[in-house]
Image (cartoon, rainbow, N blue to C red; front, side):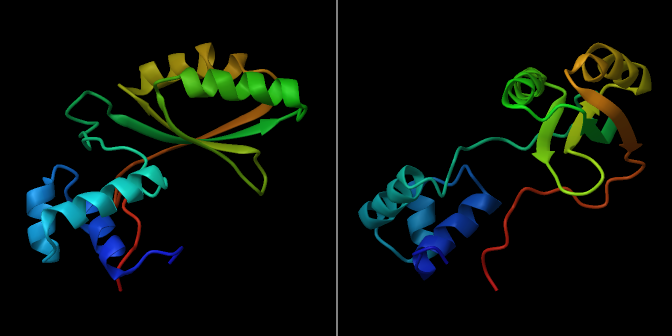
Length: 155
């Protein structure tokens, strides 16, 4: 797996499960002394296998009751329009993810909002003002069955 050995994969697995693991606890779980464990961890970070560390927050407890999947179709695909579009989307805190996709739409967004009124304001003030957008299709999540950003590493 991209030049990673079993110990590297195990480090990634443990940190996906608990990003707050100390080097001492991680090295104990791996049956590895602390210094080699720390060196491996720093190498995984410097080589970009680990991008960052963050807490996973509960969107509902924070008041974001709406999760929407939004498909956007574009009329303009030139570099300048795309750059302007991406800058606006990147700066929007409501947008959790944005993907340039194949199929009927050009982009797929994952968006959170406090409620449907808040989502409506987001559509009016952000999405409808995007350069070169010809269609906006929203699907509102009724129930979240699974949400994870953990990658399959073992097994």
